[in-house]
Image 1 (cartoon, helix red, strand yellow):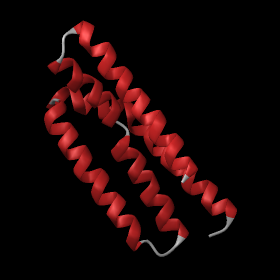
Image 2 (image 1 turned 45 degrees about the vertical axis):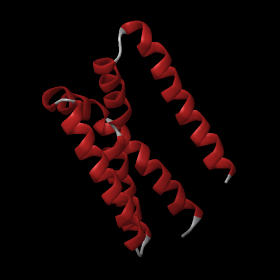
Image 3 (image 1 turned 30 degrees about the vertical axis):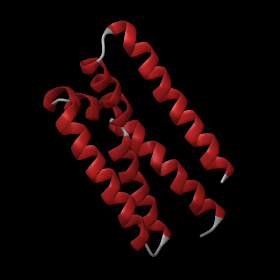
Image 4 (image 1 turned 30 degrees about the horizontal axis):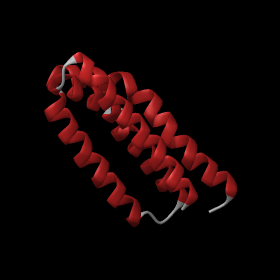
Length: 112
């Protein structure tokens, strides 16, 4: 894969994420976080496994777009789900831990 194709793959993920952020939140409110997060995680995992079977850059760019679309509503869904389980004063620490975990995972993943 050329550097330009790799850049398109990275961009395709964020384009899918950007386009599906608001629609995924609308669907999340319609079906509730339990159903939506289950579907989101199954599709996210299936698309990730499907990445292993990609054999050219064009298909990889499309799969990255789909991965961004599947991942778009996950973090807002987690925040809504946390709000269903904890009181307002407890939510702040739980959401902070979630943000910290995402940041730490990004730092460790980048180092690896």
